Length: 111
Length: 119
Image 1: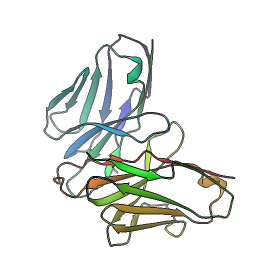
Image 2: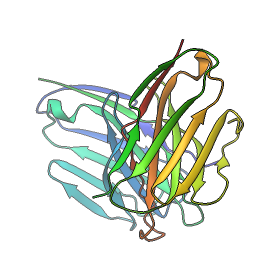
Image 3: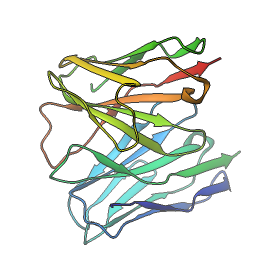
Image 4: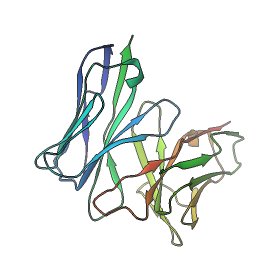
């Protein structure tokens, strides 16, 4: 069974701090997506990474796919209250349309 | 682009009634649509995968006669919760894959979700 473990589970920080969220698995994925979900809404796709070692930046967010394509990280620089939400990583494989979702990281950024 | 709508956004019903939730891809054709259930403060739980014109594939433990899925076109999938009971109360979210997306990109685009409350 493929599992994606995210850490930390919860994160509560002050505005302006930096943070990193980790997404780890023992399985290899063909792609890795990061989503952010706000309360009462559906997840919104932030980024997709497909190449081992790939790094993508989205303003203050930096995403990295592990060299072996088993793990990923999301780093947020100078967090803002608007970054508050549930962050979900999700892994895809070639042989199925399904995504394996991570356990989630709930981020709260206080002003 | 890649907008998915869901209707209704909220529904309250009495125990024993059936509720239909619609999921539409607005600006793309969806090869596959997915239905998820999400409990408070938890990640998404996949219920079923539906492909246009064929029967849905349900995940282990999900009752197919309880959660009826119809994928009538490349832009519409429906989930019907039959004979709903209070334990079916949850947040239901659909997602869709773009028919033109490459196999290496398993991106799914999500609807805004439907909050079901069964009294």
